[in-house]
Length: 320
Image 1 (cartoon, rainbow, N blue to C red):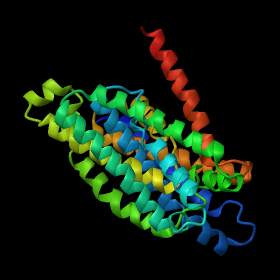
Image 2 (cartoon, helix red, strand yellow):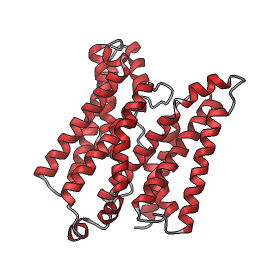
Image 3 (cartoon, rainbow, N blue to C red):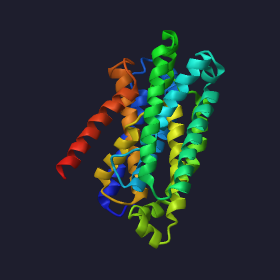
């Protein structure tokens, strides 16, 4: 998995950073109420791990299939669909509807709708337009734009009090997670992540290109359909758990490419996941202690990710 000593060293330092981040998050500034702070903060640790791992693994595999390090699964439009689901539910049924107040029900509804839409898109394009992935991505962009416009329209005419509920439902946050949702997310994502690690060597072959992979015995079409479906599950679950964070997986994936400099997916998946977990832990520390809940983790992630995304675009342009 880690043939280079440098890669092992990087993974080791990232692991130390994760352990240190967990320790700081749990024990820093407890104000003499250690037991209460531990009880409150320890509930969020599994969410950091499952969201960080799921989003990064989904992004790395998505970029392997598209052979483009700029793209991320959010281009399919699932993030926009999540915001649309929450907004339309409050718009038609109200903020006190059981679909909103019952967190597990809301989670299941959001994940189910996102998966049905994703499965419909993938089935249509892999059956009728086999091999035309970029047509699928363009359709995803159009679909996401449609969802955003419909959401904006409803938010413009909704009752102001209801709009506050929309913001509470759609802004990314680790402070409002129900423990039942974490159990559901872990139960759904863990088998998928384990399976993706199991086929990491096949992903290495897929990275060579469709033609090479086909010649080496990889059933490319079937594998791509399966991977797109699994990516949709990981993206839908992490989005429904904490809200949409467009650049989170993008940062973890691209930083892992630059640090590890390998094509081995087993190493990239581990390294990228650790990087994302580190980002989440220290971003939450900053929000809670340096900016005492004046903003949310999504704002910090989007700021860092936006700057990093623009720097990558400028770097790619300079190499043309």
